[in-house]
Image 1 (tube, helix red, strand yellow):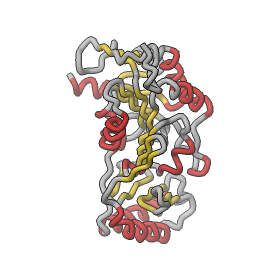
Image 2: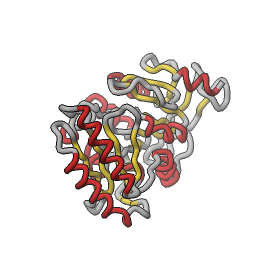
Image 3: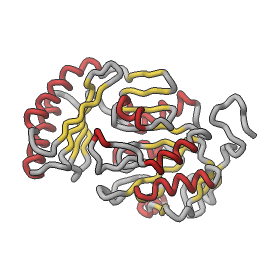
Image 4: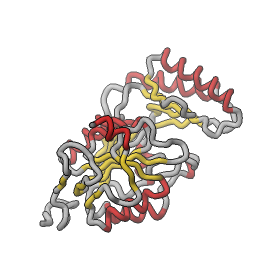
Length: 293
């Protein structure tokens, strides 16, 4: 029954779930989704677009607006809050910059401990800009609620000279480590993130769920190894596959192609938010299934 005191409850939001083998995902797995958690880049927004053109495709945005009327939609991303909030109006809570800042409703909070390293972050950003002055290379600053640069992303995927860009990126990475800053870098990928302290999307997701008092029926969608800790926290993890990844290294339960994300979300909505593993656009992560056996 619908709880009139809960803004996200619905007639079919009963929290039910079943699995033929308790505690594991099988081809017959089913679950009522009570909370949808999304990464941004490469999950609901194409990676091919530059920062200023980044957006959620209209078809995906429309179905998310409908889902957001029924259950909470959370965004857990390494983008900064000012960037991602404006592009995801269907969400009710955001964890940004890998969990360094978050917003629930109208309340914004920061993770304590990073302010003492902001000077080093600024120095590292200036070093990156000076040493990566190459065509197609972007230094994306990530700012907190006070508009201070608290982290940055070095992205050379559009670099005209990829060899020079990689050499420069390695030099920047070494310099940042010498300052005591934390790097998040996926082997073989033409970008890296620099933070004042360690970040963890799993911990960031746990904090949001605790604050919103959400415990069951959590579905998480992400596209990179940075999302792995959040896949572990969620009840169901769906890895989004696109041109820059093939799903290797992801500890998700299922996969969906980026171009099928809107179709998957539409099917979930039409199925009254009841997830079933036989949805035609998803397939099981055989590697994870074998590792559970």
